[in-house]
View 1 (cartoon, rainbow, N blue to C red):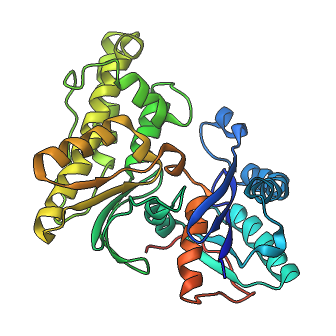
View 2 (view 1 turned 120 degrees about the horizontal axis):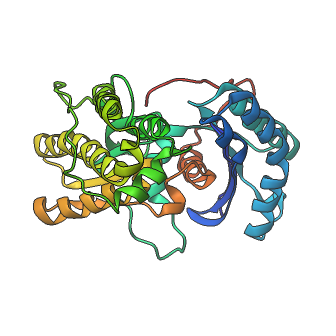
Length: 339
């Protein structure tokens, strides 16, 4: 009998629903929230209200595009956390109601694990692109920078993570100071492609082990702007391409230095990247260069699977369904946790 999983993702500001049958993606619908752009960041209350408006039509559209009836669903997989509590409550509550009405089990999904398992989404039954176990995954998003040793679908070990800001936060906060809007990461990436990555030098951390730190880079960037603006009020406008290129290069260097060390120490050459920042063209290019230089077998997700989406929730739910790893009806969302 086929296993058909409905995934629901509502951890931040995107409402998403997807349907996966036997590991193959049938639909993946995402409703984004432009309302936050005016505030330079996600406003939790506005996000939760938008989820309430979007979740019913998004789920209905996912089921429609999948070409199935809701009675064919085997289980409901939903993001339980981490994320914004109000946003998670909307998705969790909806999953409970749908689960009860259809009399099918619920499957809780860790948002971070789902990003890693996005590499196992198949778009056709013939897809064979998933990493082999064990592999290393660099998880980089707006709020997380982690190196994860993945031993199995249900066995992940965080061996390194940021002790302060994440890579995505460094991009967003520096972009905000330059007046580039929100989210800043894509804008920095676009401008970086037009600039000189060696034009400016920013500080790099000296953190032991595989852990990351980006607060020093952010401070170095701000000091550079402060000092330059004293002499030239038009400094940012005249140098924004070079500033973005140098910032991006520094972030990528920091990320790849630790990942390279982990791969060497653990003797693992299967290496993946996941999360919103994995859409960054400079980071993707760096992975390809490392594959050539160090013999890595790299796994880079499709752009549609880099940001928050329900396809990654559904594939995680699929593997948990095979293990009969269900959750009770009284499961409550959580805002913070590590894998």
